[in-house]
Image 1 (cartoon, one colour):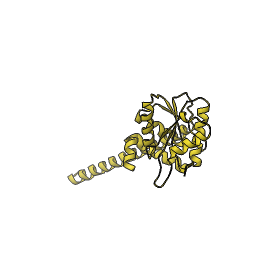
Image 2 (tube, helix red, strand yellow; image 1 turned 90 degrees about the vertical axis):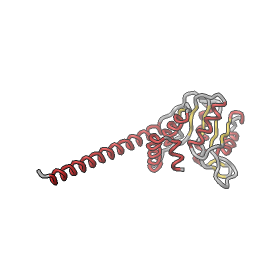
Image 3 (cartoon, one colour; image 1 turned 30 degrees about the vertical axis):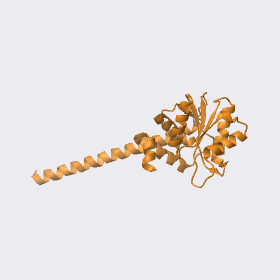
Image 4 (tube, one colour; image 1 turned 60 degrees about the horizontal axis):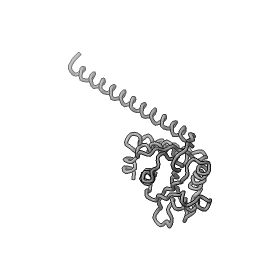
Length: 210
């Protein structure tokens, strides 16, 4: 075999190696995302109602002080946990958008106070415009108050990401999701966020994505 033939043979070997490596990486990526999707679905169905020091409600849209249906569902679920003795206080989180008069947290505070929850059992945390920021702000408040374990309340498809964020910021947390089923786009979006957040970190993902 001549020199030219040897060079062609080596190039073919390199191309095969590149193709095989690429195929292996693609397969591994597909499997990773698929497993993450199944974990998101499973976490959405898991219920943690163990006793804790506080129930933390993740914010959602409000309309001039009135909770949106999504936020109201979370607040009602937190109220049920509170009344069943899961925790003796409820932490409301969520800031406000430009032009809003009320924060999501304060809207939740008004709603629960109107349902008969003593205001001394309600804590308002308005810092943060994202899930990560809101949980980080709540963690600071809870740490100063000497709280240990908390129960997080949000939609079910958020559960796996909430656990990941809680672990990243040092918050000992279980998740008690609201009822209702998620749409496929919601599950796929969460799968992407969890898949990337596990690799680069949820805080870093927030900074990169804005």
